[in-house]
Amino acid sequence: MTMKHLSRILAIVALAIGVAIPGSAVAQSPPLPTPFVEEVMVKTSLLTFNDANLTGNYAVMYAKMAKPFRDRFTADTLKQAFKVFAGKRIDLIAAKPIVQTAPAKFASNGFLMLRGYFDTTPSRLSYELDFAVSEGELKLIAIDVKVRDPSSSDAGGAGLLTHAATDFSAVGK
Image 1 (cartoon, one colour):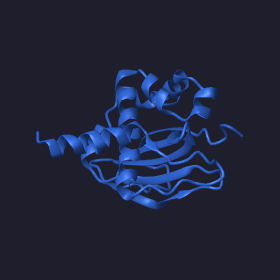
Image 2 (tube, helix red, strand yellow; image 1 turned 120 degrees about the horizontal axis):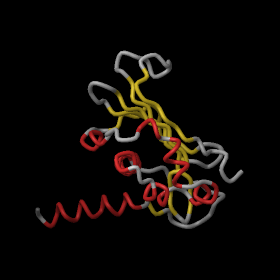
Image 3 (cartoon, one colour; image 1 turned 90 degrees about the horizontal axis):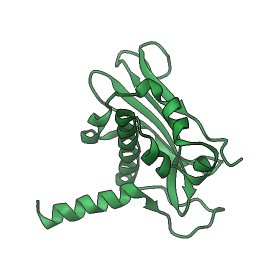
């Protein structure tokens, strides 16, 4: 591995740990992430989710969640919310590009909304991830993950293979 590759990997790991947001003004939304940073945020969140599902240990995922989430819920809340995913792998997304279904945007509640899917075979993995500024970084506060048969529409429930969601958008209100 060359030094250039090692530097790139370390940069991705640094982004994966947390995307620093300059300043701490809550009244202003931070800038939207670049497409590269958005992809890192999505993949990091979903790969952490994958690790938690495979091991049954949601402590790391919980630690990476926004503080308002951690103040209100436990790691066991995550485990219960995603029990349908227990032992299932979604790590194949690491090699796939994200496909946005909507551009990244800040909602009226200040949450960064990232929506999209991975063009995986034989099923499509769709995600809706919301991030809140917490401790000076954008951190996951809501997650909705679906794995669907490619012949089903994202709008309908037909063909739903696996679905689990935690919607903690009311956290901090």
